[in-house]
Amino acid sequence: MGKFIESKQKGICLQTKKTIKVGDSVFYFPGRGMFCIDSQIYQEHLKNGAYSENNESEIREDIADIFVE
Image (cartoon, rainbow, N blue to C red):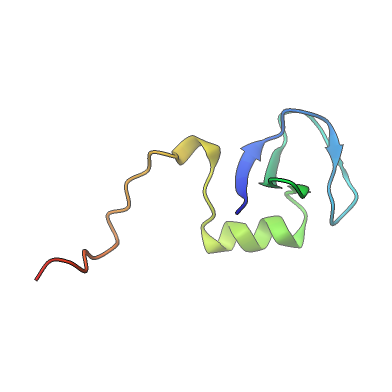
């Protein structure tokens, strides 16, 4: 599963083939690579609420507890 991160190295977007610079916001798939902000992959995951490296401890309050009666 991928996540949004700031690029820590230069690279190339797998979908658009655009240059990614250090510090650019990217969607990263471990083992696959980086997708730049202009890519369809980045935009789809942005709409679907993928996680950022900065909100790992985020508490989800919008989920109902299915075990409470």
